[in-house]
Length: 569
Image 1 (spheres, rainbow, N blue to C red):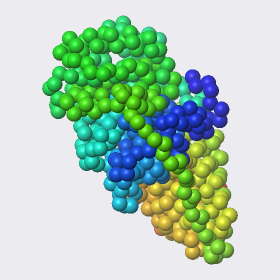
Image 2 (image 1 turned 90 degrees about the vertical axis):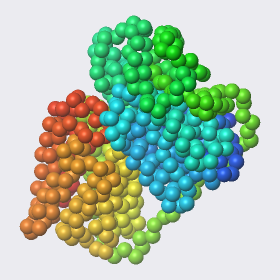
Image 3 (image 1 turned 135 degrees about the vertical axis):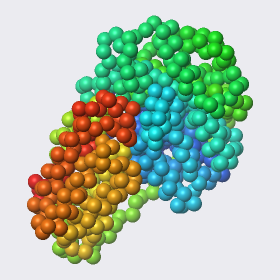
Image 4 (image 1 turned 30 degrees about the horizontal axis):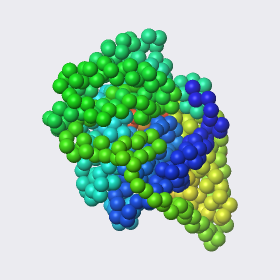
């Protein structure tokens, strides 16, 4: 387990402080990430990589000359927020556009995608490089594609080398996406990982067994099989990866190979495993070019390994072997550099609520008090929500909800103390929740609260009808953003009945307290009923069978929040 962590809530920031001090010749800190500490020319395409923390050397370890220009570091196993991605991308941008690169997970797609839209709106070219190399999750990852695991390293390196060589924006996008298209990976786990501050791993593997087809966010394997000899493990990994050979793979017969340790598998074990892997690949007619063996994309203290193969053509091989110097990867000749200017953060503007009527300001204070009650209840439920989420996910839902609601409560109180009305208080809470929690739930709760806030407004005390309209608007916003529908086994399964019953009871003439209580009861029943559903979208989809018999963590937390508000009303 992770034993050195201090305050678990500041684990990422504390580790990042040490990292940037140690590797100041390569990186400098920016809010929620790093950018190069070496100068890059104006007009260069910026490659910004990122995702949840806990995977070192991914992602900050790959920032430096010849590779990435910046890295966004989310909370442990949680996507960085849209704001965090946008801020790091702006810091890294040199006028040539920004390629945002990450693994194929729902939260990352939402947050990096929204950040790209924001960059484009400002006239900055921005495209996504979504890594989809995991053959075990074929057709079952986000957007119906494969998950991204250690293939990140190849895609990031190709993108960075192309940008360093002076490729234009469209060509960097083209060649890096091609690299992803011809990369496949497969992993095994011998033991699960433990989140900082927790005492139990996210999953366990039976004695003498190994989880086959693991995820790098602490998800268990798709199946369990007996641990074999190194030769048998090599045969399994090579066969699965070669069976997944992409149709568009070059016919050069040349490949690069990565044998990746997940966090607590010794290098000697990886070296031992590489030998029979290389033997089998050569026997299959392949020539191995510039292989990498070591901890490349980890999962905290998970025990296990993965195999990645990229089929090379002349361009890909040239870019894969091109010089690069980063904290975690050194290739070829040293690239001459000069120091970059130090990053200076831009302070946010402070909103002025001095003209808010007193009745509206009092409504804002009441909304802030409700959010503080939600924060307190979620803190008490953190461990249970994490346990539910770990059944078929990464176990971070409780932590994310606590971090999001804590930030939301602080922002709501600050806005209320400044005189904001109900709508502005709720909007401030939504922005803070999305920024602090990150991940899928963070961006969804941010959108949910903003949609609700738009209906409440700041003119006075919100009416019962406005509250019902806010609940309906929040459903529409979440479904539009996440694409989830009732039956997909997500928070929407609890959110829709809540909004429907609230609107129905308000329409029948109930007061807010009565209507909300009935809606919360419907939401709770619907959340419990998700135990009979199979997840259709999101990170739990590849492990749908494991999820049966257990409710969805997002639905459970939403129902808990509605009950908390009902009690306080």
